[in-house]
Length: 379
Image 1 (cartoon, rainbow, N blue to C red):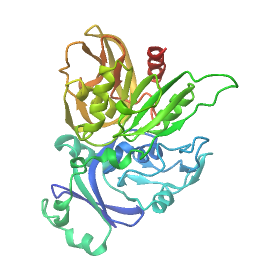
Image 2 (image 1 turned 45 degrees about the vertical axis):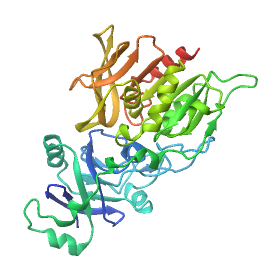
Image 3 (image 1 turned 90 degrees about the horizontal axis):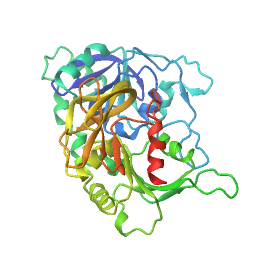
């Protein structure tokens, strides 16, 4: 047996799988039907316990951890599992997929990540939607499990001591530590399409793959890299996704401001959208329960008005951009479900960002064209 104890004392009982260890973090939910290996290795989930709303998780197993020619993961969104633990309704140890080499259970046990199955994930998700995401703890210890049996809400002991992961700079935990340059695979004599500096705030590896397959040279730099004094040669700036409160990334924001002053074309994804908004004097705020899934509809705007174009997007964020923007900046996309800002763009077209994930993995590829749109700006 294992239990999930929420910050308010609510207890959910289930069965342990993966590593039999205790953990804690911010409990969130993802509505995607597939993509658990990609989600679990997404650095944006750093510090979080992830609830999958789809009732069956693990049935197609987990692919290999091999790396590609550039030295980063071929199949995952990073080289580690970043979730603190997962919560599922039903976990399958029987798997069937031609790329699978391991069950979800064995993969998690190898990486010391705990899970709970048999939880009423519908009830848990409804609670998180009504009250907002909250801190929680997965407990494996039999004695402690016994100690909370029968206790009323608010009496579940140790859970009150959990530190909110958003209170620290999570980006610093997942960023690279030095500049890494990736050269695209090109034919003899062919030059790169462009060169970009990519701030690694927890960059998903399919973002790197998306640039490289387009023939773009990528200088991947740490979140606190001083671009203003760098001798790197580049055509544009890219701001990656990442975990936590964007206001903790003050040093990244300062460099974005410098880049805008120097008229360096800039494009951001997810956290990158929030960082760009903060750099231009906008604001961000924490959503009640965030957007995490592969079915979020986003409507495009033009000249201050919504258009008839709506794309289905993959998303994973707990913070959003305020709809009050400085002069010269416009809302580019909004979420068709709750009208939150999903993209901003400068009237010059040289600076833009989106809150969703054009690189997908997991999820639909409707927005993949945005990589090409930015390349047009660089030419």
